[in-house]
Amino acid sequence: MDCLFCKIVNGDIPSKKVLENDKVLVFHDIQPAAPVHVLVIPKKHIASMNDVQGEDYELIGEIHKAAQEAAAQLGIAESGYRLINNCGRDGEQTVHHLHYHVLGGARLGALTGISNSHA
Ligand code: AMP
Ligand code: ZN
Image: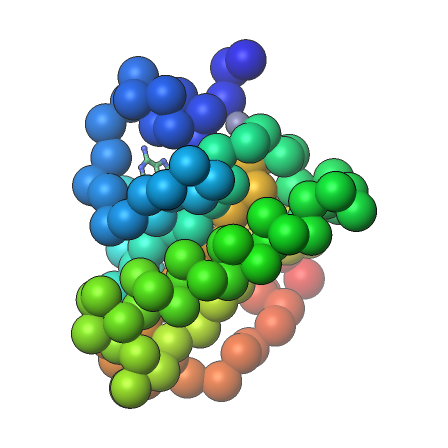
């Protein structure tokens, strides 16, 4: 399958790994939007939030667990962070393999919502 994040899971494309187990992978975002910016992905290919099935809910729990562990490992658990999933066009999803952004290491500001360029 021609999927960027599946290639990262398979090791065909290198990534800066933070943690990994048999179900999930956490790696640094190539274009960080905050001092700490990592992506948490399931190893299983799921295209988007819309494609999560009942059988995947345990996996979503694993993703939250990995996000929590990565935050602790990266030293932002106490200061706080944001966990974000972008879904579909309006969510500005660019990679169609389910992923959650963990952003932290600075005050992130309030969520602003609609961006002028797309409103
Ligand atoms: P989204 O816009 O929510 O689909 O997020 C996709 C994210 O993947 C963006 O923040 C990109 O910077 C990031 N990204 C794209 N290619 C790579 C890569 N090869 N390694 C790490 N992160 C990447
Ligand atoms: Zn994939």
